[in-house]
Image (cartoon, rainbow, N blue to C red; front, side, top):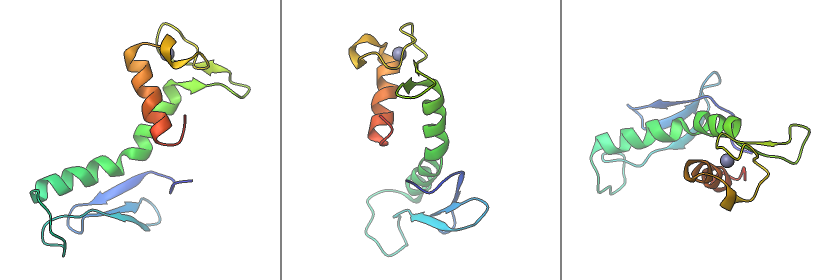
Length: 107
Ligand SMILES: [Zn+2]
């Protein structure tokens, strides 16, 4: 189980924090923070912003596609409208969402 969101990114410290508790969750590698880093500081900040949004993105995708297995049944946003159907029966966007959910351990 990951740290519950929402998360917040602190660009001055390149650290991702849990909102509310302020507990540090992750440190982004960037130039000037003791690590060799091939990219600009702006890239490190963009990485932190994206990673801090991960719980929100996961919740949004989870709300749009459910693979079934409980009382809610399966649903999705593509014309198939059945998240319990095999991956090959979904639209490309829906299949991409399902793959992203699986990558996040929610598939
Ligand atoms: Zn679908």
